[in-house]
Length: 434
Ligand code: PGA
Ligand code: ZN
Image (cartoon, rainbow, N blue to C red; front, side):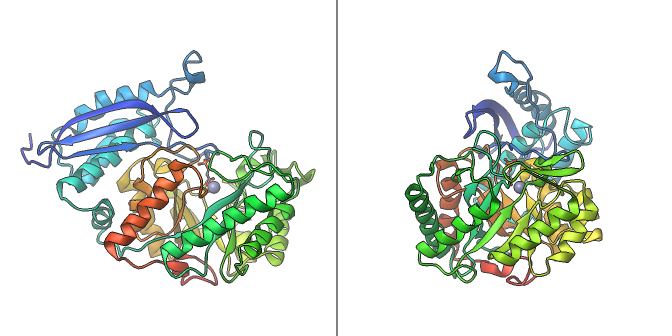
């Protein structure tokens, strides 16, 4: 057995709860020198078909089947046995070892929630052993990737049927494109959030929050939501398109019924071509600079057509790519998009996620590190966004502590590191450099 002090000496895990009150996995990794790392797995709601597998107990008597005690047992058992004695500084060997141990194509056996929590906790323990901030360690793991503070894209309005009074499109986000510093970007986001709340109250609309913290006014037509976004910008004294712009997450896989996209609010059922035309018309009318998941996760041809139809716009694949290197490689070859959302738990390991990001970067695709709707106090994504030089981050609204924990971590990193703010340079399209 390897005797270095950076070797893993203990691994444990427990069931904790995410921001939706659902069980999730937390893992602790301890090294021989006493360094420790703790990390939690996040969890999505609009989970794509091609994501790594989230293992749930399925026992209806316990948390409606959503318990994660089996995943926890895998961390304490097989995963611990596999990685105890391995050098935490060799993240790639640990992650590849876990993937081999699982043996399935999408971490179905051990659970991506189990594997990811162990992978993230290992990276944290290694950074702590080196007495290095996590973001710097992540940069090193990626081959000394140039670091920067990411441009945030932040939920103001949220759709998502039916719990959140369903709007057709999932997220309406503000992107503070005119901000020169990360702290200024947050100030703009805060102003827009406050003015949106004020406007909604004056319209007698509910300002209850959706899972990712956006307001959920339940407009039946997408235009109403976009108009409210623009009015919120103006009411905040910000110039639409110059200071702040709109990002959309259509989450279109959720809309597909048979071969058509069902816009329930508008009572329309659109073909792929009609969906493209609908989005192009919205982009002409409103200051939209980024569109995520405009079409279904398997509509590759539609994606290609859409990307060609909207030059200058960032087209982000979330469910399409699922932070999966094979799908990203296909998407790069097809030019199906020009940007990708990066979700650690779609992939399952730190090494796999960094490999996906490296492939995107070398193809000049933009990257947006993202949290999930089910989050914890864990701020790994903030360090990942900085250390990988992702350029952009999407961690939900400027409300709720599980979101603010991540925005605040970026403020601390900005203060201690003096790293540059990516601004719009990380965006794909006419505003950015890629
Ligand atoms: P999630 O979706 O609820 O699955 O985390 C967020 C997103 O679509 O970006
Ligand atoms: Zn999405």
